[in-house]
Each structure stands twice: as C-alpha cells, then as structure tokens.
Length: 363
Image (cartoon, rainbow, N blue to C red):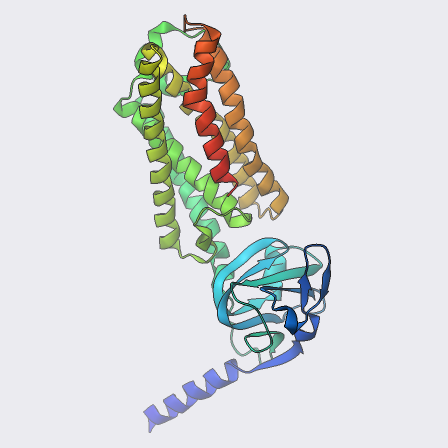
C-alpha cells in the first residue's frame, strides 16, 4: 500500500511540475530575408531561415520554445546559441543575463525549408512553478564553463611557476619584452635556442594557454573551429577539449620547428634557425599572455560584450603580422646574406604560413 501511494505521489508531482501553458504562438511573427530587407514569412518561398523578434521585458520569466522535425541552428543577436537541435526550451531571463538586450532577434536555420508543418515556435510559461523549469543545457553550463576556466587558469599559473623555478634564466629570456624588440642579444644564450626539455615545457605551456584563449573566444563569439559544442559541454568534456586543442597547437609548434630548420638549411642560414623559432615562441608567450590575462579578467567579472571578445580575436592577425616585420629585422642583424635572400626566407617560413593561418581563423 505504501509503495502504491509513493508511486501515485511521484506521478502526481511529475504531472504538476510539467504543466505548461502557451502564452503566445510566434508563428505570425516569422520573417524571412532576401538579403536586403526582412519581410513577413510566406510558405511558398520555402525559406531555410526564419527570423523572430522577441521583446525581452514583455516575456520576462517565460520560455522560448522551439520544436522542429529537422535539426536546426539557433542564433541570438548574431551569436550561435545552439546547433543541430530539434527541440529546446530557453529561459528568457537566463538568455537576458547571458545576452543583455531589450529585444532578442532570433534566427532559426535548417538545411531543409522551414514551414508550419515542420516547425513550432511559441512562448510558454510554467503555471505552477512547482519545480525548477528545465532549461537548455548550454545555460546550465554557464557556471560550469566559468568554473572550468578558473580551474584551467590556476593550473596554468602553477605550471608557469614550476617551469620558472626549474629554469629561471630561460624564463627571464622568454618573458623579456626588452629583448623581444632588441636586434642585438647576447651570444652567451645560444643554448636557449636549441630544443631541450626546458624549452619543450614552454611549448606545452604556450599550447595550453592558447587553447584556453581560443575556447573562451569561441564560447562568446560566432567563431567556428569545430568545437562550438563547448557551449553545452560538461566539465569533463571541456577538459578533454582543452587538452585536445592544446595538442593541436603543440603539433603546430613542432611542425613550425621542422619547417624553419629545413628551410634555413635550404637557404644556407642554418645558424639562425634556433634563434628564429625561439623569438617566435617568445612573442606568442608575451602577446598571448597579455591578451589571455585581459580576457580572463573580463570573463571572470561576467563581461558579456561580444564586441570585446571579437576585438581580442581580431588582434591575432595583427600580432602575427607584427612578428613577421619584427622577425625580419631581428634576423637581419645575424644574417650576412642580402636583404632579398632574407626576405625570401621570411616568405617561406612566415609569410606563406601567415596567410594559411589567416584563412583558418576566418573560416
């Protein structure tokens, strides 16, 4: 008898907590675009993208509900919120905290035409408020992502302190801004220009820092690197993603080493290869370190301006361009060949990879 009563109570509680009421069907507000102007939705146009405008204040405490028979992407004010979803319920309050705006301009995009038969959009409210309304996973991970970022930052700080204590001389050389812009450096530090266990630790640190930087940028912008799912990821998935992206960056650094050494031999300036790559990693450490520090402070303090994240991301091509110019003058002081010979070497080792990286960043 007790078991039966318990089952009835659980079912009743579940039923009460799941009672929702549709406050407004948004079908009449659908819009389409012909790339010049937005106009009311017409089914005979077979649009793949539907646009909806939602006043935040009007539907505060309510939920934006999307149901589709085909997977679609959801963008809010130009930012990708969810990708390849068929059914989702988004809290207006949570969205307003994440994307401060008096009005939401939502884009629903599918690979197949959207129509009344395969898409439903409406505003719903939980009339009883007996249980916490189920929000979409990406909003639940808002705190998880911040916790992960703080933890990853602490790991990077501990890692950095450890490698500085292991080799303070090398660390001081890597982080010396004066030497970074100097054309003349001591020949006594030539052993720093070789690939050793100490320098590999700095490569690993650079990779981890760059990966965290990219993850936060991707989390808050429309940049696509194939890891957009971090917006809805669990803590464990975020950790695996961080290590995976770090591995890709580390592989890139080692490929860069091989390219520099091979081309330096081809151009007959083998003696500058180590110095060249050392300064490349040095500028990554200094500039990415500064950008990451600014980014993390802004993010941890709940900064929400997408324009700020876009600006930080847009500085990367400028940093790489600055390095090419700086690298040319630094190497010129060590190479006895003509300026044209050195310029050809820079084109092969820096300029061509620069355009490839820009193409990847702007995908």
